[in-house]
Length: 204
Image 1: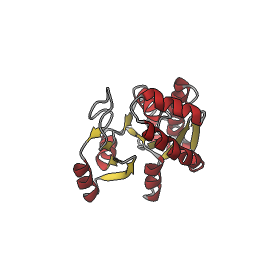
Image 2: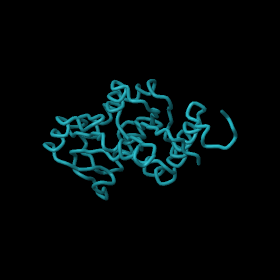
Image 3: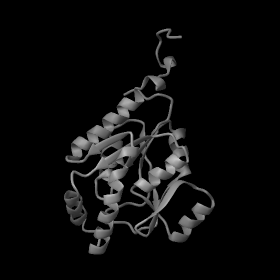
C-alpha cells in the first residue's frame, strides 16, 4: 500500500457503544503507517484496558493542568469524565511519517472543526437504538442510570452524521472495519495527494 509524504488525520466518531474503539483496534494493526491516537482520560480503566494502549489514565488535576498548558488538540467532558487528544500524539505521528486515527466523540470532532483541523471525518451509526442499547448492556460496565444517559445523548448525536465526510452503519463488525480501512486506502490515493517524485516516469 502506497503511503504519500502527506500525513493524514482520520476522525472516527460514533455514539457510545456503536463500536468505534473496537474497529480502530482491528484496523490499526492491518493498515501500514497508521497510528491510533491514544487519548487521555480521567475515567477509571475498564477490565482488560491497558494504560498507554487503550487510554492514558490520569487524574482530574493532571488533566486540568494539561488544559491550562494548552496540551490538547481537543478535549471534552463526557459523562462526567475528561477525554482529550494531546498535541504530542500528532507530533509523534508526523515524526514517524504515519497517518493518525482519532477515535473521538461528536463533541471532540466539533472542536477539531472549530480549530480548522484538516481531516477526513467518518461517522459510525448503530443499526438501531435498540441494538445500541443491547450492546451497552452486554458490556456490563455501566449502571442503569449511565446507560439511560448514554442512550439519551446518542439520540442527539446520531443527527450529526450530516456533518461527516463518510457515514457507515455497523451491522457487522468485520464489514464496518473493512469499510473504514477502504476509506483510508482511497483517501491516500487521491490525485491531490499524489507526489510525482515517488515514481520514475518524468511526470514533470
